Length: 248
Ligand SMILES: Nc1nc2c(c(=O)[nH]1)N[C@H]1C(S)=C(S)[C@@H](COP(=O)(O)O)O[C@H]1N2
Ligand SMILES: [Mo]
Figure 1 (cartoon, rainbow, N blue to C red):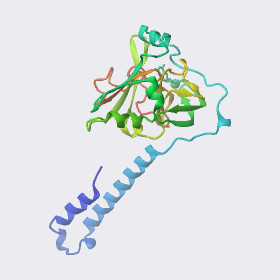
Figure 2: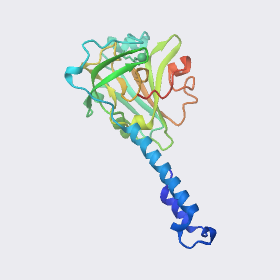
Figure 3: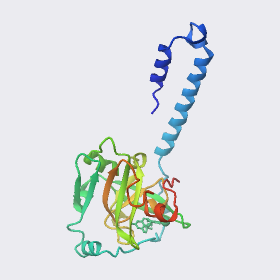
Figure 4: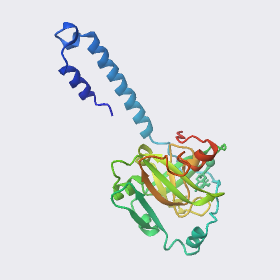
């Protein structure tokens, strides 16, 4: 972030311009000060917007039917084996640019403090549904794993394939630390079912449906998305030109 103090400090240390001995009367300085002020306010507003909460609804607003979309049953042998054994030896991997990589069993994930939120899911294909989600904030997991300073994006590797390509998605750290960004293990008061992304799926409530990765197997912190799969930050970004930032 631009440090306003640093800028003003730097200016104050400069020889005074135009022979004026009172800084406040120096038009050039005032112009710079206002420009910095504007930039600061603009930056502030942008940050505030990204951190604003998505609307949360009441129980009675919940959709009677919340459809499934995209993959409804991952076909890989690995996923099928986990499903058959009730995810008993499944582990959520948190790795990449972290100090302390994690391999969390489902029971450990469910034992973490969780958030409950009733939100509206909006799919680009033109449907919406309101559902209730429970799960630990992603921030809590990243806090435990301790992000390294080079980390800029969080990548979600999923169990399902689209043809020969694995489904994946990614978000930046603003969304990763947003309070409504959770790894949901329950939906509408029940353990997450296969259609909706069992055992865990991402909820990133300020963005469109395709960002909400289902069947999350691995959470990876990276410095750049360039070398992750096709470089677009997500399967649909790579193959169909979807926007990487799908803010709503
Ligand atoms: N792993 C994975 N995640 C996914 C998809 C998918 O096909 N695979 N589809 C996406 C799309 S386009 C939408 S709209 C939502 C659908 O979530 P739902 O099936 O719970 O309604 O999941 C998103 N996450
Ligand atoms: Mo979607």
